[in-house]
Image 1: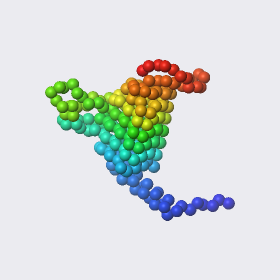
Image 2: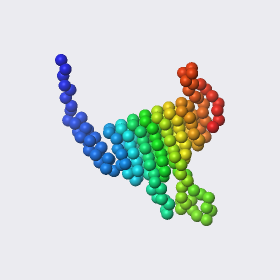
Image 3: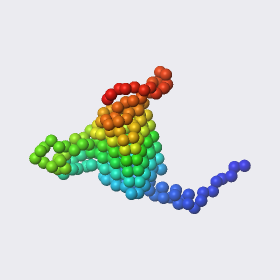
Image 4: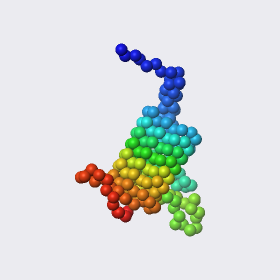
Length: 204
């Protein structure tokens, strides 16, 4: 005999809160997917330029800024975060052009991701008064970023690639690789012919 499971008052309360936050965030953000959640405290700016997929999790301390202007300079940022991506504590994401994070990505604590760097070449003007150099930063589906990783402007990280803790990624890392260090270098790569991960010593 099939017995219908009864939901507790607490479960209904969570469901109602979830529907309410989905409605509120759908008005605030460019897109806010079903069952996505963000825990306080957090700082998110220019939400209409940010697109969040379904079942995305943000832990406490998130700082995500879509930068539309800096002094007299104007920008048109777009941040995309794919379905089922998991973001741990104190992640920082800065975007003045384009940051795309794929599906099922794991972003560990204290990770920094950006598509900008400060302009500095004018010696007559303070650095904070100058504009940005911008690029496009991409993180592929199923990628894993260890704690404290830094992703620099214009970098592409391929599908199912692992970046070791505290690494600084300054150049593209292909799909199905493991990269570590400052700057990050590839130490392993998946070989589909033998279906194994192989140690390599390629310098980026």
